[in-house]
Figure 1 (cartoon, rainbow, N blue to C red):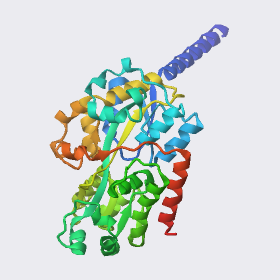
Figure 2: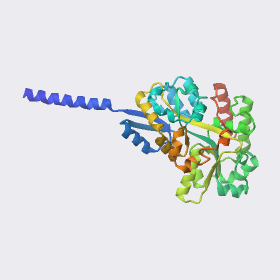
Figure 3: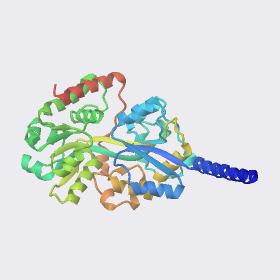
Figure 4: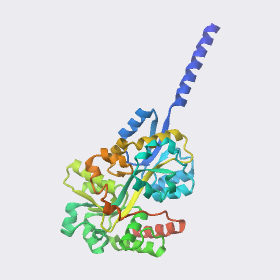
Amino acid sequence: MKYRSLRFSLAVVTAALAAGTAFAQEKVVHVYNWSDYIDPVLLEEFTKETGIKVVYDVYDGNEVLETKLLAGNSGYDVVAPTSPFLARQIQAGVYQKLDKSKLPNLKNMWPEITERLSKYDPGNEYAVNYMWGTTGIGYNVAKIKAALGDVPVDSWDILFKPENAEKLKSCGINILDASDETFAIAMNYLGKNPDSKETADLEAGGEVYQKIRPSVKTFNSSAYIDELANGDSCITIGWSGDILQAKTRAEEAKNGVEVNYVIPKEGTYIWMDSFAIPADAKNVEEAHAFINFMMKPDVAAKASDYVQYANGNLASQSVMDEAVVKNPGVYPAPETMKKLFTISPYGPKEQRVLNRVWTQIKTGS
């Protein structure tokens, strides 16, 4: 009886150890990314190819991500900050340098986008571009024509001239709730340096929005997609891929709404969302594996086809859906690319000015 009990006990211990070992060997990567920003099929393909499970969480604002990173112990292995936030966070020491020997697919990246990213990440030591795009004008073709006639929608004048905004008031104007971008766009429109941090220039940019504030219906960075697709708004400052998603949703709904996206002739802001690894990441090997997988040309192509944003992977363009890669709203023509500008992070003083003016605009005070 003692022998049988001992044998049973040994069997239980052996099974427990085996289960514990299997659990310990389970590979996982915790990814924190923007909402609606990846084809879920790609996560399945990554796990199938590497055996690494993906725990995928989403956020809808850079501030949410930054709060978690600065607090420490975020629990994430891969995140995707937008460039000005990336630069500020690198300075704060929240990221670790990439081990490029574990990223052979870096060879597929687009030199021009990599160079633009280096403004925020000197030497490209901490980040690899995932997606990039522009901040432009999304509009309802029929409603703009009804309100303004056959005017070309090719300039920020369509929105920034108070007389135009007043005519569009009844059909719904939305302004992207991203003050760093919107102020840069306004300053560029006025002929100022879009990257200026001078108080007078920031206030001048804010005045552009103050003048049209009585005509603005909403300030949001996500709900505007469905509002535009459903015909509940007629014009917005928005992100290229979001507006193209609104266009697709309207077409799929067959609701008669035609949505277009345009990069105004005065130029606009080019933003970049890039993968980085937090300094306190627990699964660093798996994080590199995930980033390297996302840099495969066919994977990057599928990602862009799904979200309708451009990516920083030059090799992916040869296998991408032509409707995406040949869309000037996604991949602007070379002459338009020259008019796209980047902006550097705001310091604490300048950020207070920006916050103050933007709050006054949004509240109508």
